[in-house]
Length: 381
View 1: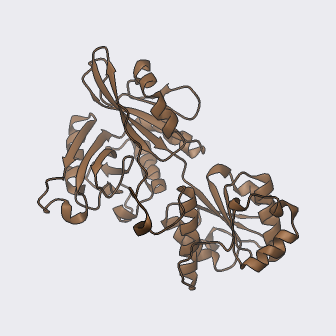
View 2 (view 1 turned 135 degrees about the vertical axis):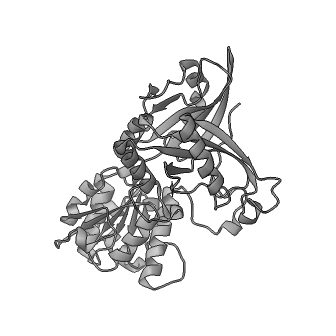
View 3 (view 1 turned 90 degrees about the vertical axis):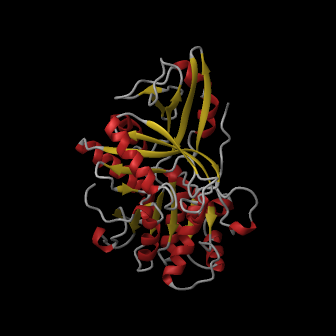
């Protein structure tokens, strides 16, 4: 890779996609690893990805450590053969030496594929803020449908082929259409089994969404721990600094720093449907203007506001825009109830709430939840 010393388990989706871009630009040898299916318990769910370069260096992780060596070894074999392969790791009858002791008590189907230009167009769509669903043939007994055949959609009804790979045949795409419809725009992955005239085909339907943005409106010191926690959680971090010149050097954990009046904050929400805003100017006038602008001029689904309830009540009394907005769109006091009062604890509370909202969750304790921890998509047959 490029010498980055980031630990594989701290790599975010944004980091991984950036590394894919760099490897493609260098035309370097690398293997993209995608969890295709899971039976039983596993650290990560279908769709989880990691990258292994030609030297066997991993970027990202797909298990809690129980399979990384085996996945890396299989990746080297895939590079040598220069063709994709679906590998099954069965840990259900493991003797603790491989996975049970680490919580990997399941069967994992993992797609390993040489990274090539077929990922260029989907990455372009994601960078442009559009959700993508990628269809990849992972198993086939039909000689006309090779493993690795790939097509994708970016939201239109059109399913497109990609460079470097055979396209998924129209008949197979049609059979997978309901799964594509269910998954598109969601961070979900499933496998669809299709019977053709000449055999059977398994298609990985992989839903990918743009990286979520946490838009922080403010310029006070408490922006720093929030930006850092958000960056670590995988958000693209944008700081909109009102009434005071600020630059990237002032907020080192931000991906972008923009300066402008609170009334111009809407321009900082470039992909509003994937943007979650936190207003923390500590100035009631600036807060009101920023919140009104976000609510009126954008479709951001979440506007968090720093401050106590009585302060928000004053703001709502002074603003018809705020008073007339669905209360579910506004979070104030912002954050989850973690009980801490230190700046880093407050930051964790804020980012945790934004992360829960972005994942369609309430942020409740897992021990109080029933069923699977991770949302699942039942495979079609």
